[in-house]
Image (cartoon, rainbow, N blue to C red; front, side, top):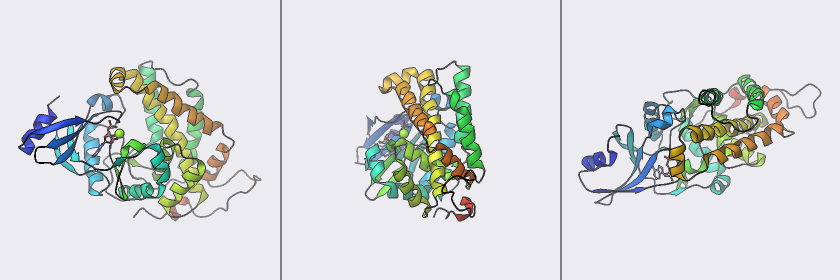
Length: 324
Ligand SMILES: Nc1ncnc2c1ncn2[C@@H]1O[C@H](COP(=O)(O)OP(=O)(O)O)[C@@H](O)[C@H]1O
Ligand SMILES: [Mg+2]
C-alpha cells in the first residue's frame, strides 16, 4: 500500500504527525497535525473491506464522498491519493447512541441536506445487500445467527410491502450509526461513505433508529422531523426499514467476523456478538404483535374488518415534501 502519510507530507511541504483514531469498524483513520497548526483527517481505505462486500467499491466511495462534501454535510475533500483521502477535520463531538436519541430534529435536518444534494454514482438496496451477504456466507461456509434463514420470508414480505408504493430514491448514507455522526456546534455532520448509494429515504431513518435503539415514539418523531408531516404510513415504512437494518447488518458483522477475523482482533471488538445482538433485535420486532399492522399500513390498507383502518389517500410518495 502506498505510504499515504509520506504523500501528505509532500503535499503539505512541512512535517506532519499522525495520531490514530479508534472507533470506526473498517479503515485506518487518523488525525494529522501539521507543523503550522493545520489539522486534517486521513482516511486510508482498506481494500479488503470492499472485496469482502462490506463496502461499496472504493472508486464509488470516493466519488460519493466528493458529492456529499458539496452539500456541506460531508467533510471537505482536501487531497486525493491512491486508496486514501485527506479530509477536513471536523472539530466536534462524535455522537453516542444516547446523543442520537436526544437529537432527532438535527439529525433529520442533516439527512435532508444530504438527500437534497447531488445523486450518488451507485444505487443501494438493503434487500440486495442481504442477498449478497447470504451468498458470501454460503460460499465461504460462514456461520449466520441461529434461525437466520427462517426470517427470509418476512424480509421478502417487507420488500413487497415497501415496493407497493415506493418513495423516490435519494442519495443516502445507509450506515448512520452514532459514530458516523459528528456534532459541530448546532450542526450535525456525516462521515464515512463506505455504504452510500441512492436509496429509499425511509431506510436512512430506519437505520438511524435501529443503530441508536429508538422506541416507536422516537422513530415517529424522527420521521415527522424529516418529512414535515405525520402520516402514520411513513412511520410504519421507517419501522419496517428499522427491522431490515438490524437483519441485514447482523450479516455485515457475521461476514466481517468470518472473513476479516485478523482485522477484527486488532480492533478489539466482538463482531460475532454484535451480529447476534442485531439479529435478536430484528427477531424481537418480527415476532412483536405490531409487525403485521406495519406491513398492512405500508401496503396502504389494512385487512378488511381490522380495527382502526387508516383512511386511504394519495400515495405516500405524492404527499411527501421533497427534501430541501
Ligand atoms: N472528518 C473527520 N473529522 C473528525 N473526526 C472524524 C472524521 N472522520 C472520522 N472521524 C472520527 O473517526 C471515527 C472513525 O471514522 P470512520 O470514517 O467512521 O471510519 P470507519 O470507516 O472505519 O468506520 C469516527 O467515528 C469519528 O470519530
Ligand atoms: Mg464509521
